[in-house]
Length: 489
Image (tube, rainbow, N blue to C red; front, side, top):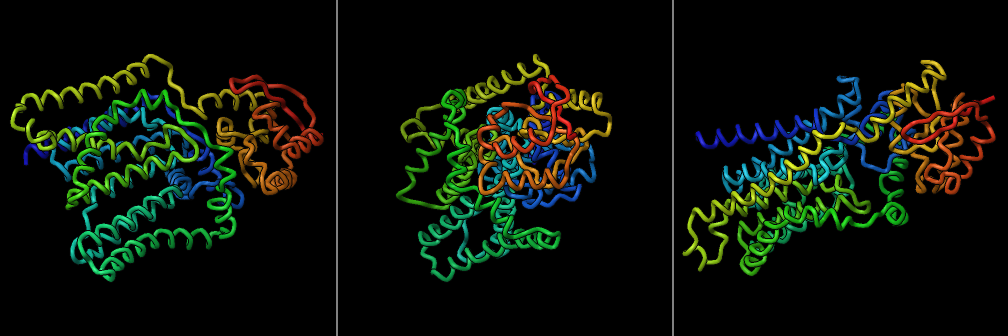
């Protein structure tokens, strides 16, 4: 009992130090979906009607609720990121401890802390919210028994339903989990009726948070058709082609040491494939969540999309090292000494610490930057000095690097808010909707970054409207580039 308490205390300490570094030291990234969009929702903007967002709704809605308590959007974003990282690290510890004891738990949390920067924890994004949900599923998971545990299956479903409201790619985990339950049921010679009951209760659980969301959303003036268009229809194959980016091979090579023990885990899993047992079912579920974590990076590659993969990779590593003596081939088990096993474990821990410390040291040697935010307060000050403290500007073209300017100026955009900089915002009559919203609001000022994202090529209608309606009266220089100040005559 004393050892277990010590392990918990050490895990809390490591997770706390790590999350504190994110809050106070590390370079971060806060896209407008985490600061400006929640603020707009609190200004009465409706998701998928006046806020064009092709992501699932839960993250900005939760942050909007948070801004009612902590109005400082930047502070709230930092607290949320640090808190979710802390929670994910602790859930990783408890999940690994449940599976293979306190040593596995400590090793898993050390892995999590050391590798978190490499797997994108610097950015508050949809995957940041998804990560503790996936870790919680691992903690609660146990292969279904002879009789369905209705409560446990319902809880699985609720977590999966919440995950789907966080990001659409959680649908792959739902499909995989249902398939695994069917497979395990067949291997255990369960009747089709029993398997159907298990799947049924998971689906009931999934339906609960989704039903609660739609009840709130539709009663608040939302539109089912607009929700479907932006969350499902807009994300079609064409969008996948437009936004996809190639894998960063250099990054994968740099983080390859983090996958060494995954190879050992896979070899053990494949070795037991011919004689699946309860442990095989546990390992199959871990691999399923791991694959679901990878899928969040499709179609747009970015390390921050890999955040849900980190707890699973940490648990793989903790399990393999904690069970190393039993994993080794039989002829080695008789010859290898316990001290050799301990040295192997120490070697891996040292490797992880070297990678983590290298980033932490470099972070303290460079000025801190918050991407999508740090460049904007100076730009907002320039606008206030030239146009007055209550000035409101329309940003064109608007992208994620500029959009938090709305929040800093306390200047809501026209009531069809979309990133006009990107080519995929020029589809399906969207430019006409942009122009109609701009005409309805008729802002006096436009902040125009000519040539940015080649907006004049993919959205000529919007550019032509602005250039024919507004006149250049000044210019602003900023780290985001030179911009024209344009005024309506």
